[in-house]
Image 1 (cartoon, protein in one colour):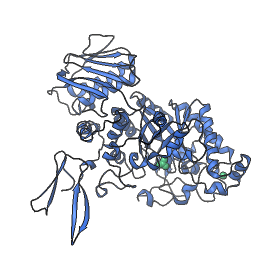
Image 2 (cartoon, helix red, strand yellow):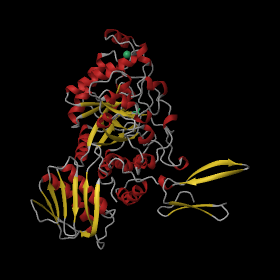
Image 3 (cartoon, protein in one colour):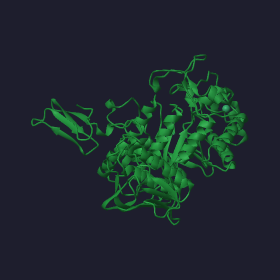
Image 4 (spheres, protein in one colour):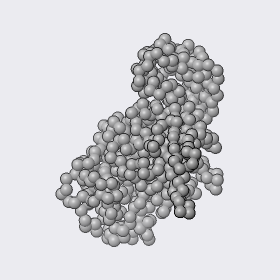
Amino acid sequence: PVVPVPAEYSVGEGYFYFNADMKFGVENESQLRMVSDFVTLLGRQTGFIPSIMIGSETADVRLKTVTSLPDEAYNLIVTSEKILIESAGDAGFFYALQSLRQLLPAGVVEGKKQNRTMEYKIPVMTVNDRPRFGYRGLMIDVSRYFMPKHNLLKIIDAASFLKINKIHLHLVDDNGWRLEIKKYPRLTQVGAWRVKRDEPFPNRRNQEEGEPVSVGGYYTQDDMREIIRFAALRQIEIIPEIEMPAHTNSSLAAYPELACPVVDRFIGVLPGIGGKNSEIVYCAGNDSVFSFLEDVIDEVSELFPSKYIHLGGDEASKVNWAKCPKCRARMEAEHIEHTEELQSYFMTRMSNYVRSKGKEVMGWDELTNSTLPEGAIIYGWQGFGKAALKAAAQGHRFIMTPARILYFIRYQGPQWFEPLTYFGNNTLKDVYTYEPVQEEWKPVYEDLLMGVQASMWTEFCNSPDDVEYQLFPRLLALSDIAWAKKGTKDWPDFLKRIDKVLPHIEAMDITCARSMYNIDHKVTPKGKKLMVELSCIRPDVEIRYTEDGTEPVASSSLYASPLT
Ligand code: ACM
Ligand code: ZN
């Protein structure tokens, strides 16, 4: 019961037993560090303090480099005597250890629930595992809800347990600028703080000039270095997103001179949707905007080792550009006919700068509305992600994060049980059954598809628990669709696996939704009566009726249903 499901495995007879005298053998320092983390957690619960030796070929659990294996792949060979782990490098060794963690009882490798009398054993088996996609992503919107560092680290840890390897941080939006930029301190002094409004996101009134701001926060560059290091030790790359030219009232609140001069209203950090204020974007005719953004990119490219920088580019209103004399002068000078192409000018200019730093550019699929910057990697979110295919048709690589399925802001169960959010449902089953590669695709599109990403927008989140609730268990389904071999979906098997893996996630003190056990109902008129149909996305949740059909009884053998 491993999530994501291994590519190939076979289970034999008998078990390998963990014990106090066992020895781990590693080849180098980085393997030593990974195995030490594993052994420390194991020891905390079991009382075993296994020794780890560099260079031992006789150890009970041995890591062995096999350079012929593909990147990120591993073999896990368990006999009743020994465990052998083979991989070409650290990523595969790390993933093999995550599979081992999942095969031990929940709590053992989370350092919880001390139990020193239990037997710790793993079935005899051979696992030959490798991922389907090189990009297995989770986007976290830390702008709408500022996730404290400690909680962000917890989510990164849980994501790495599921072999997710990219965390895309949405660091900038209208609702907050979340990264310290040394050259522009007002970005965080002003841009990281918004007015407190206790209403749900869509109902929040904008800040009045002079109103105190108290909600927010940001990551210092030292914080971010710590996050990057923590993630790197877990084989995760942190990809920064610096939004432009829209979704940035936070930076414009700090430096309003970067907006088009036709904007005559007060610009504050938005507490909610923002109405007309969300139309305020960077002025495309003002060279100071570009020098400002280049300075930001200088610090971002220095800070983040990732080879990617995401430049946003979504949902940019052109209403001010159309009126702005500076923007119009730019269009004239650059022979640009339409404001949509002015966005291409903007993105291409910034993209060239990012490329001059040796980084690759990423952006949302709105970039396909005009001439695409060279080499830009596109995230498909609109129309089931289809908008990204326009980029693929031009030879661009892309990532699928269709809003309809992989935006975890949506409800995951019957809406009357769920915390308030919007945009309909993306259930666990919707996520699990998602296949990004469609039959009508040209074969070359599949080659250009780097992978899939869950996008966690946090407009409705007010605490780390709220974020965790939306993420789990759906992140387990994301991990499976990103890793599992194409064409191997098996919903009942997935449910069995997550029932074993979710307790590990809960042992990490993560809040998981129970929505998949909820009983949904559909009411339809039938003559002078109403017919009520009950259903659950889990086939193993049993719905029983009394003899005369008048009193439905719903029960789940696994968790008490909220419908009692
Ligand atoms: C987006 O959802 N605006 C990328
Ligand atoms: Zn302008």
